[in-house]
Length: 299
Image 1 (cartoon, helix red, strand yellow):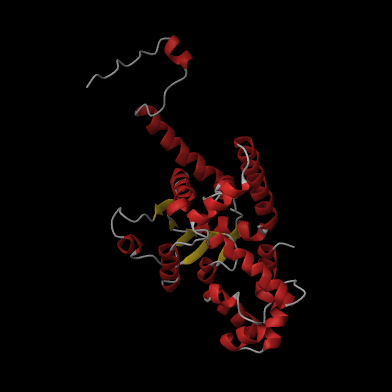
Image 2: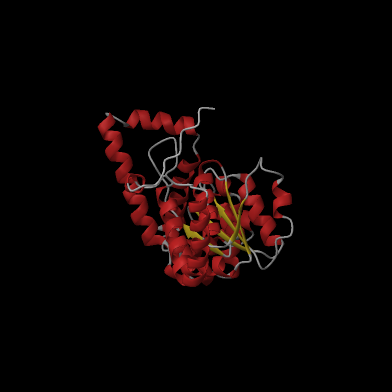
């Protein structure tokens, strides 16, 4: 069974000592994955038996199997240069790249669908529905799904703010967030520090926090009320955002059908504005049937 699903299903069943050990692993990831069970137990302040039982609760035969899985996650932290070198080494032809990348994205979609608990998905939508304001932070590669989520939340009539460095001070943007609000962070290995800091700040202010990331051992998870695990691995120097964009589509669609009247009202208002300002090019038939074309500007 995939590690994301195991963590999601078993997190609330961990004992206090097991939670303490799991938290230590998340906080000291790169160190922990190379420690023996006894050394990790010493560092985490628990017994060696607790480390072994933690691995077993998560479905592994023992700590070495858990450690092996955690070490594979380290590959996600490789630099873009190293990953490109590996891609060049493993690739034979252009056709091979086309097939390989698309097959990997199909796998990312399939595994993401399998690993997201439906109740967690529904909780995320409920939080978006009930939030007074929604802050969405996603930087670097994760900026694209974050911006799309914030944009279309606005289309649905929500007060959504993308947290973007360079467009005013980030902390001024976040000032005043409260328990009535929701902060959503999107980040994948290598995780951006500002995204983690924003979620930590939100949690300190009593704000509900959601995370779209690769797993519950992600540093975004430590401050999150819910985590939607998304697969993003590609044999490339970039991460795949196919599954995260699909998840954003699903969240927005579910939110829209839960509030049909509010959604319809918000969309009608925007459609009226778009038509008034002629935002979109009309179909050719509309021009042909008598709509006057605008003369092109030669300024």
